[in-house]
Amino acid sequence: MVVERKFIDDLMIKHNISKFLERKLSRAGFSRVDIQKTPIITRITVYVTNPGKVIGRGGETIDALTENMKKKFSIDNPQISVAEVRNEKLEPRLVARYLANSLERGANARRLLHSTIREIMDNGALGAEIIAQGKLAAKGAKAKSIKVRLGYLPKAGHVTSLIDEAKVASYPKYGAIGIQVRIVQPGTKFPERELKAIELPKSIATAQMRPRRAA
Image (cartoon, rainbow, N blue to C red):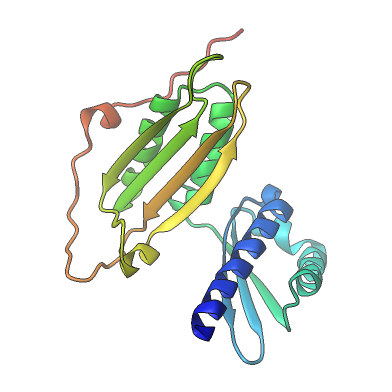
């Protein structure tokens, strides 16, 4: 029971740190954070699209961030390193933020989800799922849900830990929309399962975002 409690506490701390960094590093394109505790230090690796904005001139920004996290989360001897995101199309949080911003600008939800999941798979993902729930239509319409899913994504068991996931909220003028993105990264190995390339459905393979007409 003590081990389970510690496991839950560690997950909550990571969640809170992730939310904190997302607010602080939004302009740097924050994607995710990895935390490794040792008896001596706590290694924190922050993945962003623009590392320079995290480090700052002469390291001032990252030094201030380190001190802030040390006090806010009572972390002993935190060591923060910054890593650049290699492929934005395979980062669930960045994909979810893109979807949220596009929906707020009035993009067609179904077309947007189809074209986005195609891009994810085109970039080598072994599986992907996007779910949008909420006010997806015009004013007065009922809330609904749109889900697109391709490839292999286990729903239960310890293998679900191999899936990267992010959830964000979008706020277009008609009401809130919840967005969930799940991605199985290229090269992920699942026990006793060999993954093969899939053929995209025609509705997704041909999906394109149409430019909005000028008002």
